[in-house]
Length: 463
Ligand code: BES
Ligand code: MN
Ligand code: ZN
Image 1: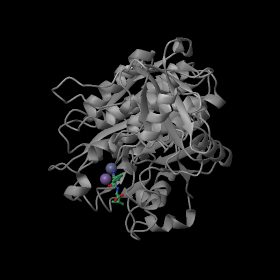
Image 2 (image 1 turned 180 degrees about the vertical axis):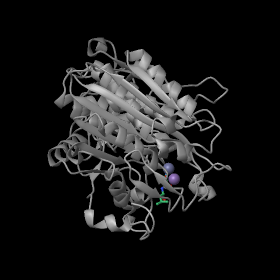
Image 3 (image 1 turned 135 degrees about the vertical axis):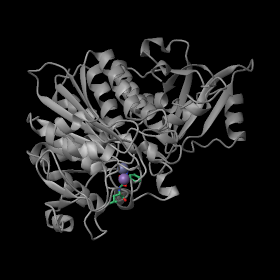
Image 4 (image 1 turned 30 degrees about the horizontal axis):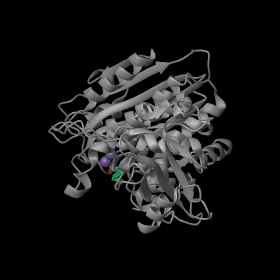
């Protein structure tokens, strides 16, 4: 929560958190002898993430020691200070010594306080520690990032019974309202008249009607940036139903939409000089008599006919229509984010989402920003020769293809068929979830890739 960060001017009287670098000696020299003895007696040796709360002579908390570990420690990341959020008693703190990255230290501290307690009956016992940010850290910028990340996490963590297409629309409307954006939705049967047939086909089996959420914000004359987020509020797999374990986490299948909205929140709060558009096809991939079927052939908005090899490859279908619509106004940048394939996880694991683009400059900028803000992403190839894996026996393209290999790449290639201007397009195949708690990243829904993108946008379109 942003209420966990204070301006650096509030550092007076704050309890110092002394950062102890595992590679440097004599860092405990300034402590009282009693404190040094205590640190030694509990075995404090600057191990990464190790905390020691030191009392003064009267027994009150005087300072905190925080181990950073050595340079070669795998646990030494710019997010390590996020661990402080889990262990500090209530109070106001300041950092002493050099964090590896002051802004990321403060950011991880704030993000480490995140808890999803909306469904707990007992009042949350969220720890109220606050950090006066280090000198030179832009608190407004951090506030925008924190609230964007928290929005994304909340949307993903909210269970599907309370985060269906209507509730996702409500969340988007609330966001739009708080930043003066306009929003329109195309609902249910209207999708057919509006020529968004794939969104309708995927979502029509649910009692909660499918819809396209279309939000716009900013100066109409500014460069157009369009974000498209996969909003599958629950993915049963459809008639090609998932296994119990495969379905268990599928409330997070709107993680792309959540990321797009979180990124939009950052952009709007920072008043970047863009004309922003966010498109979210919000659907539930449900099972009923009206469900689309394996073997069906559907005509897409772009006119491309698609045969359904597997109803569980639904994300690329709803994105196909949304991307086609997005391309019609020729945005300068078109970015989609989606929990699109299990294959992306097989390739890179849960924490490093692949991205795809043919724009070398943009790819370089994203990779650079990713490293800078410690928001890992990795470029994978839009390997055109694999397009033949999507060959359909009856239609222009199949939504799955046959080979069972390169699943994240073929999904990206599928999407590329619906892109008018490939050099302006980037696709992120995200996971949207932290399977275990790490500093600054509690277990649960996670905002992947959007801090890196916000960094890219901030450089290109400063507010
Ligand atoms: N939402 C899933 C992909 C997914 C699964 C993402 C688990 C993250 C974690 C997507 O709709 C899907 O089911 N994809 C299939 C595609 C296949 C049928 C071609 C997959 O990846 O298995
Ligand atoms: Mn699916
Ligand atoms: Zn899905």
